[in-house]
Length: 91
Image (tube, rainbow, N blue to C red):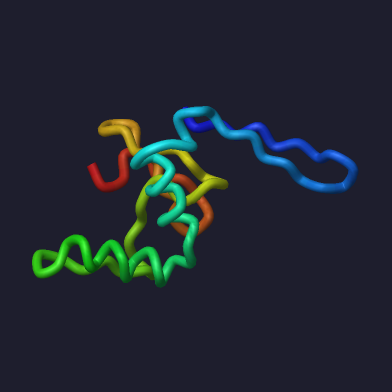
């Protein structure tokens, strides 16, 4: 899911997206999560207030922008923690 086609053409990197990545809420989600971590956390916090706070240093979210577009799937969640993936984290 969400695999990107990354190619180098004449010294420039090109990224190809699936059609579903470029429309509707999926596109908006990828745009949001492509922002710097602190900004993503701030905007996510705005969505969950007053019930919670998103910490840019300790919380993880998926997708993580255009370069890491995979979405979380219940029971298959892989969270990158300190450089390694933790299976089932947050489940």
